[in-house]
Amino acid sequence: MEPPQWFELFLALAASAALFVLASYEATFSVLSRSFLERLKETGASRAHLMWRIHAPRHRLHLMARIGQGFLSSALALSLFFLLRAYLNARISSLAVTVVVVVLILLAASTARRVRFETGDSDELHVPRITLLFVPLFMLLRPFTALCERVIGGDYTDEDFKAEKEEELRS
Image (cartoon, rainbow, N blue to C red; front, side):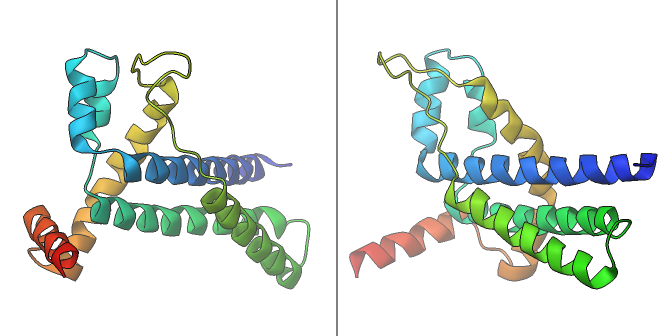
């Protein structure tokens, strides 16, 4: 392997790992409420303040996850294509890339594990270190999510979303 291929291999592995971290972030924060994170922060648990800061409403979280999946699967596909085309012809390389990307996206989505903020044997709350991986993804995807929200929804706010959900629950 030449040095450029090492970079492509690293990019493919990093994008694959990030897909799994993003799926775990979505699974974890889809069930966590902001009030739970505030209580966790008040107990003085380490890293709780950081998790509270990256909490987003569910509609924004899901949009962020879809944008991240798009970016990461594109990065994965491009890096794999440039890596494999050195060894295979373009058609076989394209087919292999398609299969690998689809399989990895399905694996990431289906095996996503929610990170638990409590220990199994006691009621003590803590924030695991693995959640620190959520922060860079959140920071990278936040500007793109804000841009998409502006383009798609105009001035759609969290209060509008809550009011819409309450109306759905009433009917």
